[in-house]
Image (cartoon, rainbow, N blue to C red):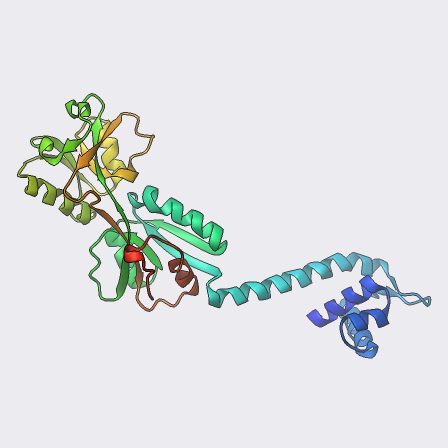
Length: 301
């Protein structure tokens, strides 16, 4: 099999059409360059240069092979550069988990920043509820997750990356749509499409806490794990929903959104989570991006 050195020598002679000039360009003497070209010709079983006259000319086979030789050298150089980027995190793969509710608020801006700052890092996306993400992170099939707190597993590290308000999603024509801002007490006796207590524990416990603090009782119509499913039922008139502000998009034409007044104006939390000790260099590069981490700190591995 021919070597990269033989290809480099052949391309230099083909471009210079002079063995002496090509040898000087490659910072070597002419005899070893001649042996490189002859060795390449033996491997290929063809003559690459016409040696019938005093001038150096490419043979028909040499002309045909020149473009392939240049391409092979470019590919080899690209492979070297790519593998050198891996230890620094400039290239590689990160498996990233996210919840449906986190996608509008953080996932889009994060992916845009990665495309700009880490264009050679490939992202494998997996939409999973928080409990599924935590299992995948602990098991090593995810590198990074965007989950709802709390994160109590000792093998995982986390940082808060987003806070946002809750809003009330109302079916079109509901009496509360006449309010500019809705207080939690205004929801007393209303039918509410609730988050599932297991799959969406953070939201379930947050809403239960709000209702208890306000001293109200609501009627639970359904329990669902995904925010887009909650909004679909709101649109169908099954009840109202309390969801993150960023989760309500224009696609829900039958849903009217009103701000919810709460003691904490941004009670919805989102954490970035990874397995402590994960040595994927691309993960470290992603974590070093300028995310809005709590207290202005970047996460530490």
